[in-house]
Length: 196
Image (cartoon, rainbow, N blue to C red; front, side, top):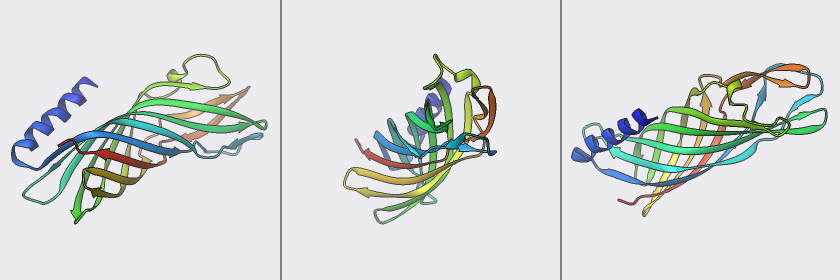
């Protein structure tokens, strides 16, 4: 994690010398869902649940090619629900997300896409006591794509996030092991503010 922060800071310093540079706080609302891979008796997917992220973003315009690079560091809390024997079981995941968007601007409108890294810090479920983080991978890799709007000093984004790797493949439900496709699949609604 420390190496990642240092890389982002070095990128910011390198770009700020020769490019337009912005930095500021960022708050996002995420809507995510846990997907079952196989049909299992008495186990059903729940509705999509809302979570949140907060952190910082920076944006640097690359002068020669007219694109910008926008890395973000966000602390994330996401929830998912499964229905087991007609009872809801909630899963909660706390992560550090690092999307790195590359995009272009047309007036105030932006189009961007890029990789997204997730680092799991802890995990829990409503019917099991304690942290269940050991059941999941520490790191997963995904992607984001979306559109944005810059309005005065405010930065608005709507993005879809998918995953290229699973962070979990099975969960235990009673005496049954359920195969799941536990990937980050969510809509991201973000607001930021440019400090400079």
